[in-house]
Length: 89
Image (cartoon, rainbow, N blue to C red; front, side):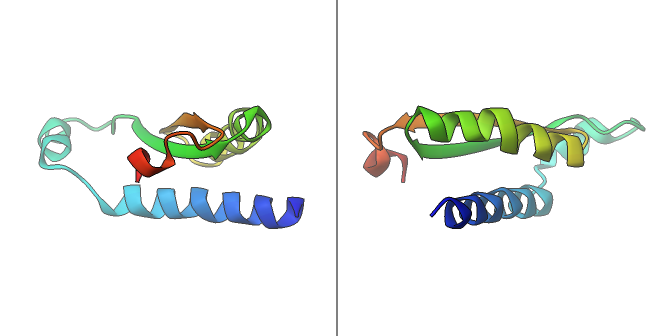
């Protein structure tokens, strides 16, 4: 079950990266005009689970993603025990 969860988590990170890479707002374009350095980008991940799931994301997956993708920051928002899953979707 742990391997299945880790695979699902990895797919979620890859999907979040793909989506953020495809979307660029017009404000971001306007801010980059005349600037050689691109601003940092933030990916927000909404997860539902227990504190062990939060620890997995914050102590393992997020640092690995940020190390592999310089310039990206990941913000994890936890819905503890899925109490607000219906509202998040």
